[in-house]
Length: 389
Image 1: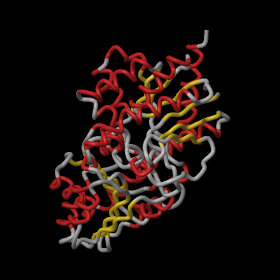
Image 2: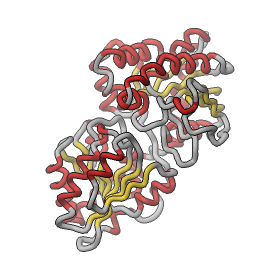
Image 3: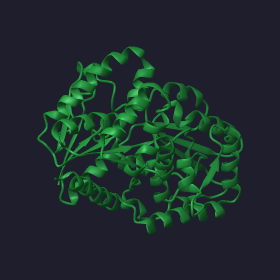
Image 4: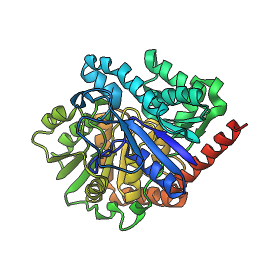
């Protein structure tokens, strides 16, 4: 099957994890014998590393190509500078033209609502069926105005709608009941190699240094400032080191907030380097205000870290579903986060038990990227066959 994959985020260089899950899915689909071409925007750093099957496009002078690939994507770029709105119509037109110039594929797989809209339009023009994958940001930002228009248009134009979490699917069905029959859920996978070796939580000792890590974009919605405030209080009681992996517009503010604490800002790391930092930690904290299906949390569970997350639907589904595999605190509640970390330190055996339960559940689920790719391939073939005369 010839698949044209559309995305606004993709790791163009080895040290980038922008849209890394799109790359893992594309590679897993290729391993199943499919031809996968990826179309995504260029960035502001120069030529990419010449990846096979990758088609990039320019939409502005190179230094001005700042709408995609950066933490928070297009909404964050516009928030940083309202003048970036000027780039949006040019970006959309250049993306649509790049899609139309590609050799016709058997099916289009569009990641995020905006590419679902563009892919849907291209599909109408070329007669190609389209499947759109909606992620957390698509749904949480679609409360009103242009974001709602983009989401509804993508859902209308595409033949099938994939969500990466059950809570997302339920919200979409409730908000847009006319599209219920189109909606399916396929969770993101995880690299099966993460289940190999000793679980990170085994190194948690009550009297030694506690290593905590955070992985994600440094944007307000990820709640890293809540974590830093909690660490400032806890550092008065215990020897705590916090590792922060990721970049974003909030980095300077967060570095100022971390002054005087044992906090290490690693910036963007190649994926294996990020895993090495995570393996040296015992506790993973995800203080986000909204998520779709957080990949970093799944990876932390696979590595055997003790996981603490905001009590929001996507995180609750993972940490407090059929098996209690972590700790929850009220979103935005610094005091609640402090209480959960204290609970872990006061009862490390229970914390290790929860972490191992989560790791075992992931192992039993078999929800690796290879398995996820098979589910996508089955859906894509079904949609293609339904559109074939």
